[in-house]
Every structure is written in structure tokens, then in C-alpha cells.
Length: 597
Image 1 (cartoon, rainbow, N blue to C red):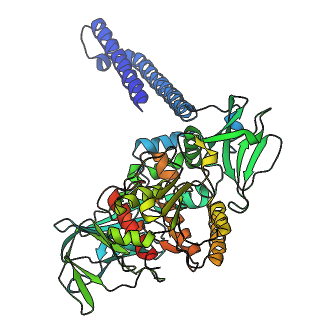
Image 2 (cartoon, rainbow, N blue to C red; image 1 turned 120 degrees about the horizontal axis):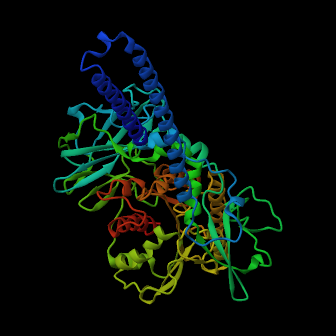
């Protein structure tokens, strides 16, 4: 558009100067008399000049259009070059052999959409959507529930008649004592959504209703991106006589064997899914030593999948707070007959955490003065001596990723034991606390998404570890599982199959050791620093992973620890690695289950 204005402006000035010069010359010839009124013979010359103006104007517009198209193509080529030029390790084979779909360049239409802020009137619009409080004001009392109704609208202020948007809702008490809780959202599939909150304490609370993804973005994530294989790539390092070779790797359920590929499977842990690497000439598949995530190729693949719909995930359409609705909620004081008072909040009587329990219809819990209060089961904050008595003589297995690795450090702090860093304890560690006769084993699962090389001999599948416990003479174990943070780029089918196989491993261990406590920790929202992270690490997909975890392990001998609302409603920014205050509350719930078990 700048080129068009530039050429049009100078084209107009050129024509204007031509006409002005012609009139001055004719005025000199006629002695300054009126040109056309007194010299009819000059009309022929004026007709000629009008034709000249028309031709010059047409040529100017034609040239400006050509320049605009060429410049747009040049800019698009620069974008493609930037996206497809990786900076990390280069595998020996070409990248085009790995990617199954040709990269679709950004079109002029999509670039115009991006330049205008990604505005698409068809998408759910946070600025126009509304919410209201349904519960009557006289019924909004502490220890009760409050219900809100969201009405989604598009960019033309039209009420939508379909559901599918991904919302989050939180209320905050900012005065002392500070409090917060998240609401449960029900999609009625007609453009409206119900939000149910637990009312923590009396006073004024701020309401935050957030549109994370509009329906079209959710549909793209569910139907196209999540179902597509090869959305994350690694580089496999092979050591042959002291020389290193790198090869591109990925996970797949559809891989076929051959001389040009190395397949690494584990039917007990992965089922039909295998880890696939391109085989280098003269290099044995058995010589792989490390893996490292290929960040550039993974980002390239992410952008390829969304194509021109990338604006779905830009700021105009991502994580926007609704403004058309009440900002403040006023809560009256009320104490029920079968409730006890704790601080300034009203806490209902709850079952112990060693019994199966259902999630409440409103919030799962709330924060009050940096303390999480569960509404699922009764959580007791154990003292140091009580923790030691509970864990004495046990072998605690923490199997998962870095979000569970934080538990190792957190437990040491809660037990008053100094945490000593070990070599390579990022992926595995074995610790013994002599005063408690307590062993703590941490293992990271394979297919780690890490920007630094991971020794494949330091990671182990959870199922293999659980089956290994079957050979033990004792059953003094406690097991914690948490497979979610590194699986948002797996297909839904591969992830579900992995969970079902893990559940079978849990059942086999429970058959031998029926009294072993087994805890499965759920997913939680996280930060997103780039638009690629918003897509491949979407909070919507993370929420779905947690739902699959809960659904699959419910009814089993494992106890599901749901921390989604705990993390979401914490009054600071969500991060993948949580602050100690949240880790401590997670461990309080874990210990309330294990020590009552």
C-alpha cells in the first residue's frame, strides 16, 4: 500500500505539472486571453491533452499495481526464508524428506489480515461478548455458590448460536486477607456458557472472565493439529568410533520399517507408537546415545500446519478479558450450621483424601492468604515429625518430568532436610535420607523435550519401572505419576494408548501390592512466550490431557490429584515450573492422601 501511494502521488503531480505548463505556454501565445472561450481552434489541443492525461493515469496505476505485487511476493519470500532456515544441528538428510506436506506460504490475504491485527468478524469477539450474574444478589453469601452466564458474540455484535470457545474464569479478593478461586465452566453448545464459583469470603471480589481461544481456533487445534503426526522433531546423536552423526527423529503410529530408518519401540509402554530416526549410511541404530529437540524444525512444522490461520492465535484473538459485564461482586456474610470458620472464610466439612471423591459443581478449592483450601477432600498440613513418621521406611518413586522433579526438592524443604544437588539429577536421581530410612527415586520418561542433549540411558519408561517393582520382596512403595507436560505434540491416539498401557502397569503392581499408594498428578496451565508455544503447548490441549488422565485413571487404584484450578487461580502468572508455594500445597494434598492411606 505504501508503494501504491508513492507511485500514485508522483503520477498525479506529473500530470498536474504537464497541464499547468501547457496552459502557461498557451497563455503566452494568446497574450493572456482566455484560452478556450476566445480560441475555439484550441479545443483540439485540449482534447489531445485530456487523452494524454488518461493514458498517463492508467500507466501510473498499472505500474503501481505491478510494484505492489512484486514487493508483496518479496516480503513473503523473506518470511519463508526466515521460517525455513534452521539454526540448530543440521541432519545429514534433507528436511524435505521428513515433512510430509509442502509448506504453504503466507498469502497476500493472510498478510493483510495480520497487518490489520488479525481482525476476523466471524470469530468470537471478547470486546463484544457479555456476561452477567444470574444468582440473585440476596443469595450471594460466603460459603455459597454464585452463577454467571456468558453470551458469546462475533465481531458484528451478533449473538452466536454454537459453543466450543475455550474460557477461563477467576475471581479475586484483593483486600486482606487476599483470596482467589477459579470457576467451573459449562458449555451449552448454543453460544452461552455457565460459570459456577465458590464464594470464599465476604467482601468485594474482582471478576475476570477470559476468552482464551475462540471456537474456530479450538476446532483447528482439535481436528487438524492434534490429529497430525510429526509435530515435534528431535535430533538423534549416534556415536561411531568417536565420530558423531545426527539424524532427524519423531514419534509415529504409522511408521514402516526399512533400511533407511531406525525404529525404537516399547509395546508395553507405547503400543503401536514408535520413535523413528532416519538411518545414516554405515551407522548402526544401536549406536544412538543422546537426543535433543529440534526447535527450528518443530516451529517450522507448527507454522506450516496453521498456515494463514495463524492470526487465530495472535493477541487480537487470544487470552482477552471480557469487559461487558460486572467487574465487582459483593458478597454478604453467612455461616451455615454445619460449617466451621477458618480465618475469614467458611470451610465446609469434607471427606478425608484417602477416599474416592467427586469434584464439586463449583470450584475445586480456593486460595486464602497463600494457602490452598481444597473443596474436594480434607487436606491437613502435616508437621515435620508427622511427615517423617508417614514416610519412614518407604521407597518413594516419582516418575514423570520436571514438574514432578520439583517435588523432590519440595519434600526436602518440608521435611527440614538439606537438598544436595547430584550429577545429572535433571533426568534421574536416587536419594537416601538416613534419619528416616527413606529412599526417593526420580526418573524422567523418554522422548524428553529438551534444548540440551539427553542421555537415553538416563531416562526410563514408567511401565518398565513399575514392572521392575514386581520382583521386589517387599511392598513398601509409594508411586507418583505425571505424564502430561511433554505430550501436547503427540497425537491424541498415541497419548491415550500410552495412558491405557500405564494404567495396566498400575493394575499389575496393585495386584501384587494392594496397599501401595499410587498418585497421578494432573496437568496445569503454563506461560507462552511465543506464538508457536501458544499453538503447540496450548492450554486447551493441556486441559484436555488432564481430562484424559482423570477419565482413564478414575475407578482404578490410583488417586488422581487435580491441580488445574489450584494453579490457574494462584494470584500470579502461570508458569510451567511452579513457585514453591504451589508445590507445597500440591504436596500437602499428596501427603493427606498417602498418610491417611
